[in-house]
Amino acid sequence: MENGKFITFEGPEGAGKTTIIELLKNHFQKTGFEAVFTREPGGIHIAEKIREVILNKDHTNMDGRTEALLYAAARRQHLVEKVIPALQEGKTVICDRFIDSSLAYQGYARGLGIDEVYSINEFAINGCFPDLTIYFNIEPEVGLKRIEANSNREKNRLDLEGLAFHRKVQEGYKEVVEKFQDRIISINANNPKEDVLKDVITVLENHLNI
Ligand SMILES: Nc1ncnc2c1ncn2[C@@H]1O[C@H](COP(=O)(O)OP(=O)(O)OP(=O)(O)O)[C@@H](O)[C@H]1O
Ligand SMILES: Cc1cn([C@H]2C[C@H](O)[C@@H](COP(=O)(O)O)O2)c(=O)[nH]c1=O
Image 1 (cartoon, rainbow, N blue to C red):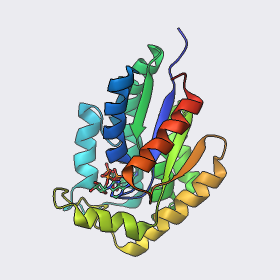
Image 2: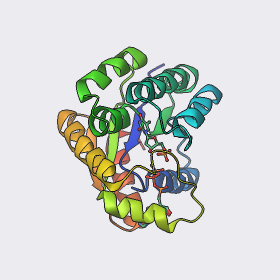
Image 3: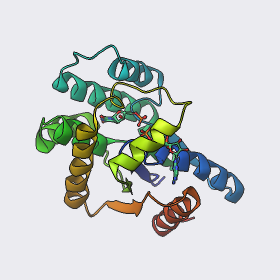
């Protein structure tokens, strides 16, 4: 059987990735298209445990390389347990964040180097790159304001980094989008949810047989 398509959503905090995933689930339920939705770090038991360690607000002394390695370890386990088996069954997998988050956050914003972080992730993912990545392009100030306004969301260790860090994350993403133009498509995430959803569906329709 032919492998399914591996699609990732990327973008800064509050860009709307999780919201659009929920709206997409409803859309696919109506159209009858089947997809596996998952997220990083997490998606399976071991990776959710690693997520708790990385994002714990008390772990303020976590070293940047430790952080990068933990994200890569969670990624590896999630791929092996959930993503690769689903792709092998011919399913479409849509994942909230993947390698580009590590390149932008750890590689660029933490200053570890995009190429260095790419190397450890090359080892972790062992060739399983996304077929398509949708980048939710938004100013960090707008995303952070959205998160502030959402009283249901508990802030994690990365959310609590200052605006300067989140501006660097956006700069990092700009480099990553430029570097991997062949697989990354940017959409305007400043627009109302319904418009963002339409744009995402259009991109997916152009890349999947749906
Ligand atoms: N297009 C939009 N316009 C206005 N508000 C939005 C839009 N999309 C999402 N929001 C709101 O912004 C907040 C953050 O959205 P969401 O959790 O989907 O972002 P995210 O990209 O998954 O963020 P993170 O990666 O930081 O978890 C939520 O309160 C959501 O309702
Ligand atoms: C995969 C990945 C994620 N991050 C950061 C990005 C966010 O701040 C959190 C995840 O939280 P979310 O609300 O579920 O988006 O982790 C990162 O720095 N590096 C990564 O590889």
